[in-house]
Length: 279
Image 1 (cartoon, rainbow, N blue to C red):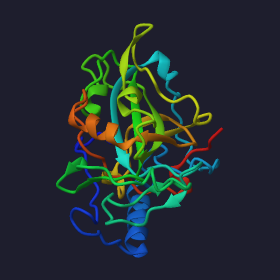
Image 2 (cartoon, rainbow, N blue to C red):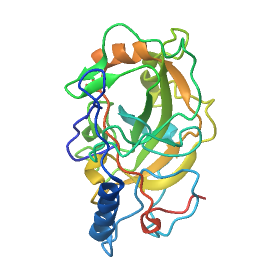
Image 3 (cartoon, one colour):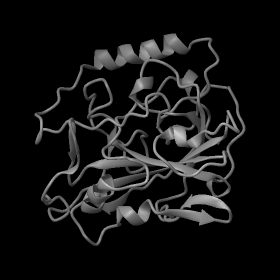
Image 4 (cartoon, helix red, strand yellow):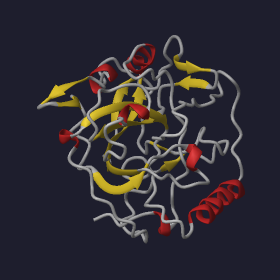
């Protein structure tokens, strides 16, 4: 989740464009050092993404938690290739990737059947940097705002001329893409409409565990070496859900958010000075 360029970035795949080389641990360590240097003493609030199983942090910049998402307007839906957060059923590290958010993050810990991993015809959410394949993990962000807006493309849809600093909440759900027409349908999972006067995602899963709620920020790889200035209340569900990969492909071809492929992920924030306590 990011606010600067609103540019979705895909993931390079070995099938379509050749395998992407992982940068060294030194590169990631340098990015984390630069993040620490560029935020030290500047008053940045707690950052995201984080390990939701780690409950302690040292960042004391406090802000009021956003209301329940049921009392806010859904403003945007987008997803990242691999989970940005770590924890629950997605603790397996995908690797360092290219250092710019591609082929990194965390993936589903569990096992999938051969049937679920069966190749599908055609490309799923293709882009110049690749597409999606059975067995891939994605993290979907249902973004909500206290601004009086309608759901729309980019996170700019969450802002309005009337409220310069709306409260923001992200309901996050990690999905695993499978070749199974009986799995969840992405169109259903992203369906939205008015409920009690608010725009709402109508079918956010309620069977993937109690959401871990914490104070954080926007995400995205553009913040690997600088702090995000936006304050976000997060709700991250610890268990994954399986979704029919073909339904994801259809959604990428036609949706209200102009999303056609996956965003990259920000490095996990591990610096205690940049994460808050989880109560």
